[in-house]
Length: 302
Ligand code: AFP
Image 1 (cartoon, rainbow, N blue to C red):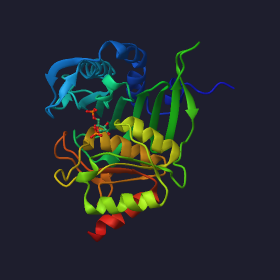
Image 2 (spheres, rainbow, N blue to C red):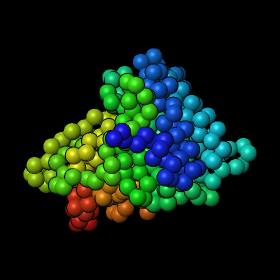
Image 3 (cartoon, rainbow, N blue to C red):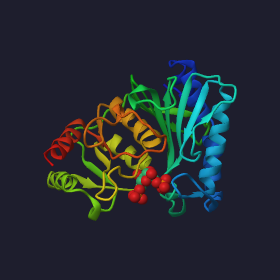
């Protein structure tokens, strides 16, 4: 029997949430086909002072336009916009967070990158990650997949390139494997805190294998498949680490919890943090529950 398409799957969801997922999914071909042609700099900087790649800027523009067209999105918080963008009609119940091209420094080296989306149905623009109703990401890899989570679970859809070009359900109700085998760790080891060093040493002694590719979407995706953990920890001179709470850490934390895992900022769940700035950063650790628990135990000793 042929598996369900993404569009068929979304008919089981709230229709507004379905419209948001399909708006992003329907742009996959357009974005994918553009990838080889926009690998240079756009010549502008985002709010983090980082040079924007042509592809980042372009992808942001097409996604924002399509999401606003759904009529259900009130506000978009995007890495590339700087400030939240409000729908001028002030209609729509949803706040959508967007990292249009996560891992954009991988564009030139041709390593993995993708799009991360979080969906909130809240009056406030900035709310806790636990209030998300859905989160998903698109991975434009050799095989293009869309991994989508609601509180009911996580499913992976694969984009077909022969015959029908729809997304088809490829992994149903994904759960992290026990025991997890991988660790994917960001930040320079010389800048790790003593607590984090102790944790990593324990994980290495326990036989975890290191695999890191430099894009949260790609690194997270392998943890979702093999189990283990992904970290971008607090660093000695950067206590908030590197990754953005609202657009990166929250959607991925929501997905890991829906897959039976846990998330942490070294003190507690990332999903409990009330953001006060759309661009704030947080240490982030996502993975199997027992590993995240152990990470917090070790940090608690210091
Ligand atoms: P870019 O989008 O600037 O490439 O940053 C990617 C990212 O935000 C996240 O996707 C990675 O996990 C992390 O930064 C990689 O950072 P390092 O280059 O310090 O490993």
